[in-house]
Amino acid sequence: MNRRDFLASAGTLTLAAATSSAGHAAEAKKYRACIIGDTKQGEYGHSLHMAFALRPDVEVVGLADPDEAGRAKHAAEAKSQRTYTDYREMLEKEKPDLVSIAPRWTIHHKEYLLAAAAVGAHGFLEKPISSDLVEADEMVRAVEAKNLKWAMAFNFRATPVIQHVRRLVVDETILGDVLEMRGRGKEDNRAGGEDLLVLGTHVFDMMRFLAGDPLWCTADITTEGRPARKEDVHEATEPLGPVVGDRIHAMYGFPRGVVGYFGTTKSKDGNGGRWGLDIYGSKGVMTIRADVTPMVSLLRDSSWAPGGKSVQWEPLPGAPDMSMKDPVAERNLPIINDLIASIIEDRRPKVSLQDGRDSLEMIQAVYDSYVQGRRVELPLKDRTHPLPRWG
Image 1 (cartoon, rainbow, N blue to C red):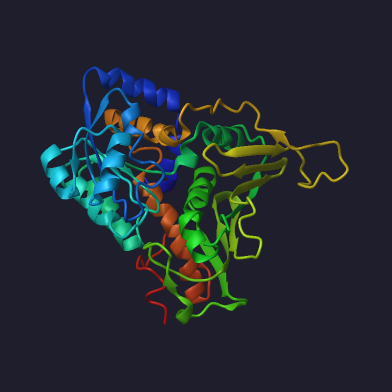
Image 2 (tube, helix red, strand yellow):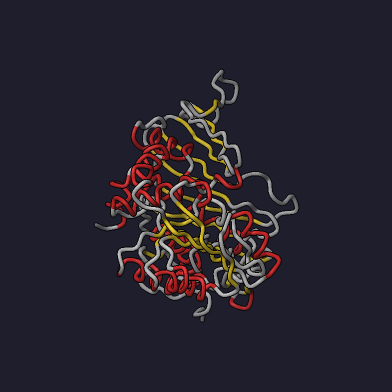
């Protein structure tokens, strides 16, 4: 099954169904979970150490962090039975069924995941998946070789709200024919290349979820108002790989003639709350603004600009209840529920490691297009990072 066929067949991530499926197995199996964290290398991402403790069929048996104070603090939050300085020692001694790879920094993601795969563990990983596609491909091969189930921490796409958006837009065609999608980064102090990588990865994941795999990409990048040059390439503020540009505009072609746009621009006004995705259809517009609970609105107007008309923006029809007692801990619970269900059902998680790789591919396609000065086809044939090979 290719990626596009899988996306179509996977359907939507249903929290209730995943919880129910895993719940039936809870009496038969108690999963052993370990947490890999590093307080000094991106900490624990968006609380990737806390979701396992919300499952009655999971016991957190170990947490590894080389930082003593951070290790004690996060182990208490994760309700971990034991702590370790070295994650390799933890994996060898605990032999976990599940592993959470929590650090934001990507520089060790591959070695963490390969070590977890070596002991036969399933798990989930903070985004972005890695620093380049060569690493991402190796990570995917490692888990597929052992039929391990690994999910990505795309917590926005996993929410019941975004699942409902897909049903309305794709299955019920509430917007009519989808014509285009427009995404933007957070455009804070990271605007440009780092924004493309850190925040764009969520936007690209949602684009794929709604429209399928992109077919091509073309992009333009500037630095301080002029075309970006090789000497402008630099490391991100956190060790995430090379980036370039303070203004990026990218365009993607999707199946059925749908076009997607992504932009991120450094400006004196900073973050304007535009981070998210707008979906434009023949019958109206839907906006998604990223947050712990995504904010979604609908405009039923084919002109996309009501002006003096009586039509107004409205809340998402039939939106599921998104109330949470502890949003910080619970934001990743839908991913964990589906991950465990995927182990029981022997299928790919619906927010998968492969999705993380494919989102990163859309990011590298931006640089590949700009460096080559032309539109590039996807999947990319050259998997190495375009910026180090520029020139």
